[in-house]
Length: 277
Image (cartoon, rainbow, N blue to C red; front, side, top):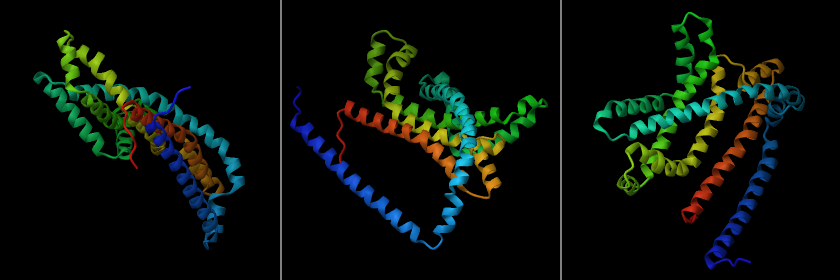
């Protein structure tokens, strides 16, 4: 049976004390909300507009059905974002003077697409690019909505990957090159594996954010969960469908957020760092 060190016992005690304080403060806040909110004068109107049980039960299955389109957009966007982000990050990390145009393009790309809001990129690409083609086959909003998401998120994720690459100490590259490895081999076999392990938590945060921003594609036409909630709201003249849509997003994003927290804690333990209150 393993014996805990004094340090481990101290940290376990701190975690236990923190959990007790967090539970007590949460109970106090939740109780205050439950007791105080119904005392507001307009609570009855808000409850009728946002918490209608019949509207919720009627609209929720259709919201779930529409959410499947969000999942599909997320699934086919994610690998494209990762591949483009990796290419941009490596382009920004090139050190050969002959590849300066490639570095300059990567810098301009990240500056432009990080500087423009995602919703504006979706509008510009979703309504502008289809006008270049005569065929209706190229007017599918799902295509251009996906393109807009990939272009915008690649700019953000590439910076996360670049930060991971830069976090690998130069001595690692020097050691690899001294063993006769080429620059590409050093990047593929030494730098990227270490960089990817370090950036998993921020990458998870980007995926959670992407899962929510997929709903913005509805602004150029597709009937996904946000658009469906708007339709249901008009049909019932009630805002409860929006609450149902929010609940569906939470069911998916909260586990992803907890996974990101767990990965952060694991990385902290792996590096031997101690959380300081």
